[in-house]
Image 1 (cartoon, helix red, strand yellow):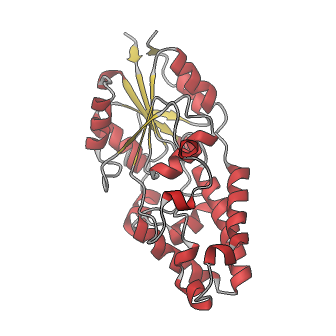
Image 2 (image 1 turned 45 degrees about the vertical axis):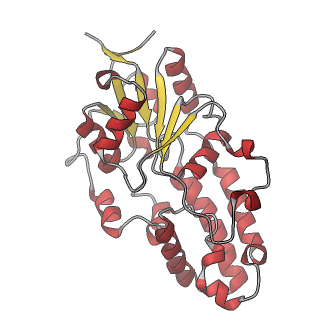
Image 3 (image 1 turned 90 degrees about the horizontal axis):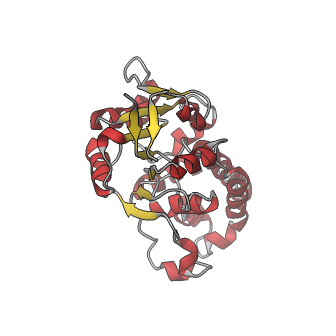
Length: 291
């Protein structure tokens, strides 16, 4: 008997696109320029940025420069965003140059959708940053739903109307329905995944979950009793770029260490995508999509 698949829930970062490369290239470009323009030691800036990221619970906080104590002390009366606009420009340019889907992702998702599958994204990246990537990567028209944590608070004195350059509609998803996961609830909490499955009306026995993290994605899927698929090609813990992320990330130190140490000996995935997302079609000849 074939395994019927009517819903595909997928992680986004490092599963559909190389988030580590996008983050590393853009953040490093910004940091390099900050060091050059300010004369402040890289280690000092990294330590201060880490504190800011931890305060807001994200490693993508858009207003980090304005909140760095060493820059504020050096320029007490200046608008730091203007003072270090070259660093912000470097960040945006590097992000634009790096932002792309992994090969075969779009074609595979479109094929699944054409065969009647519900396509759902579930990410720990906050809504604003996730929506930006979905819009730029043409995933807004492919995903039926995306689940992400609510956005962080804006700095005191700022509002969205003050900082946005375009009409509100330019920042919204047009076709994908956006829903927030409960604040503070993160992977691998199986309750969140169970709640997502229930809220979209999916059948657990016909649902597969795809993700790059053994510790978060695969463990969660197995605890939820849906078919788990490991996007092995997206695992980034041993890549050189990951070291910079470890220095400044908002993730707890113990969690970072455990992620690096988790292996398939501890958490054995049911199915593995070795090199590309499109291997989903050959990972199990028993899979059939709903038509």
